[in-house]
Image (cartoon, rainbow, N blue to C red):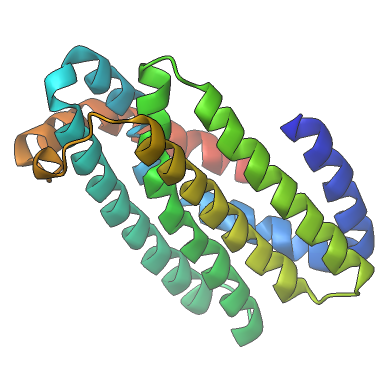
Length: 214
């Protein structure tokens, strides 16, 4: 459903924006994606840890969340620094890249996605994705019909990630009655385990993104 709807809206948006504007939007997404390997490398490892020791689930999720926050902030700063100093982008284009990069901060809440998948409760992930897709698609169509500028579509990327993260949080709070705030803190030992097991995946993801980007 997401692929079919996204294809329809993307084709319409591409036709509206034209090669130059849509090309720059795609470039911004790709450019930001190249430096998203730090946060992405944790994905499979976090799911494994959630399945291995149920008692430490809260600490695993909290630790993974903060590791993703740190990795994402590093990525945002790196993307902006590279875009500003090593590309021919002007200030307006750098602003667009920064908005897209800033939207990745919401990726940190994907640890809730991993929790639902580990507990075989993926329907809540589907609900959150459908809500995000529906709202994002409606907004894009409204922007197209009202001749909106490129920056408006860039903000939709930010909004889309925000809504998806909000959906994860909503379903987690509503259906996870065993969550314990006192145990949801950063754990250095767990962080070391996650990093030690995930760095090969980080390198793999980086290689794939660079290859696809080129």
